Image 1 (cartoon, rainbow, N blue to C red):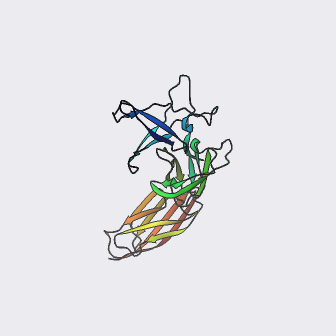
Image 2: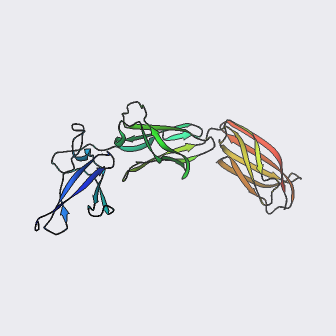
Image 3: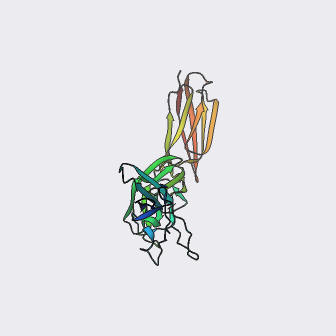
Length: 291
């Protein structure tokens, strides 16, 4: 039979829902080899959660697969994002995807709660994928998760997932939590928070390193809690005759460095004054230059 329009079949698959359906494409003209068809991707909403082609919602990714029936190894695939539109007066619900910290700022050593809200996984026990959630500090990875369990959060629903993490006690800077939806075309969202050092409670000594030194030495407070910083740290350097030869200081810091390259070999006395809160600590010791 010649002069007739042929048809081919394709299969459409919703990457988020796991639903699929067959669609027949009609040849645009006899022997043209070009096949086309049109369908309406209906939106599934609260009234019709199981209705609509592929159970789609805005921002879903739909794949179409075609396999050459004469050569089953030849496969073509395209994908497209579902957007709101079509029937007049239909306003589909927005799909919520976000990640957030439970506070805007933390003190080093505190426990952080990171919450992910994702409508695409409503009712799921967890969200899983390699490094689906990553926590960084000043751009360096602190922790990552391959699974985020569902969480019972006050005022939250079945689309809420959460993890916790205890911060190291000696850090400060900007935290960033990044969530990547684990499916093709998924969104990437992030949130930030600040980490401030713990309040200084006590200073038990000064660490001098290296000692002896050649050109530069660093004076660091031994703080309680670990990671706390001084409001001000001042280190004065004296020769063995009691003459001041140098002084270095810093604010909101746990250490200061001194360059003694212009002094000769030998022993020097340091006096370190640490101020924090309403307290002041003073420490003395020797530092040695050896080249």
